[in-house]
Length: 181
Figure 1: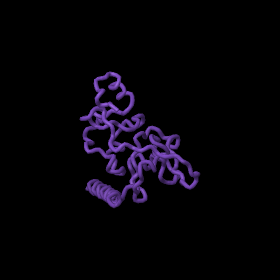
Figure 2 (figure 1 turned 120 degrees about the vertical axis):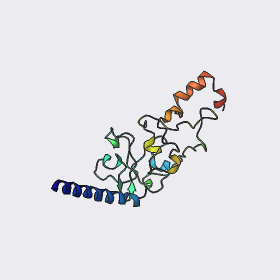
Figure 3 (figure 1 turned 135 degrees about the horizontal axis):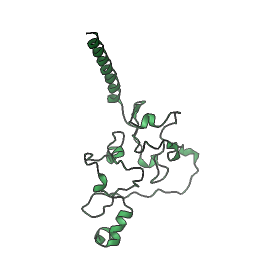
C-alpha cells in the first residue's frame, strides 16, 4: 500500500514539473525579427551570435531549442562540434566600422531551379547542414524558410545544391534549356 502511495506521489510530482515547464513554453516568443543578412558577416557565412556570451556552453540552450528570456534558441544542426566560436562570432556594433562603398549582392526574386518544373535548388552549402529540418522545421525560424512538407525527410531526393551536381547537368547537355542564360 505504501509503495502505491509513493508511486502516486512521484507521478503527481513529475506531472506538476511538466505542467510548469510546458506553461513557460506556451507563452514564449521567438527571437525578434532579424533580416537574414543581419545575422551573417557575409553571404554564406555561419550566423553570428545575436546575444552576448554568457559564459555557458552553447549546447546548454542550442541542443534542444531551450526557451530562455522568453525566446527560443534555434537548434544547432551540428551538436557534435563543441567549439562554436571557431565559426560563429559575436555580433558587433556597426558603429565600430568606418563608412565604405561596399554594397551587398542583390538576392534573386525566386530561387533557381535545375529544370523549369522542378523544385528550387538549395541556395547554400550543405556541408555541416545535412539535417535540413533543423532550420527548415524550427519554430524559432521565420516562416519563409520553413518547409511545407517536413514529413519528407530526405530533402536531397528532390532538392540539389546549386554547385557541382548542377554543373553535371550543364555539361551533359540534357538540360541545356533549363540553364539558358
